Length: 102
Image (tube, rainbow, N blue to C red):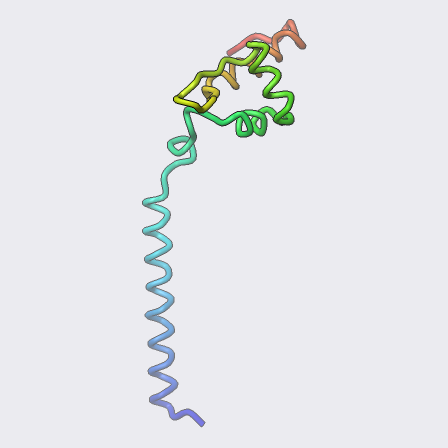
């Protein structure tokens, strides 16, 4: 059975642990970058397809048909994130002619 001093020591240790956890959570919240700051400027074909909610085969076809702008970086094919947004906006305008960009 634990003595009163052992229980007091355990309670103090638990209080210190709780304080340390709270401080570390606050530090993490302060140093975690905003999602916008971590977004990629250039996307793989798979990432672009995921953003549009389509399959990668269709995305490759859109790129090869020049419907979505892409660039080569060395041997890699990348799609600017802005090109994905522009394509989505273009689709919205074609499918809804009364839609006006704000």
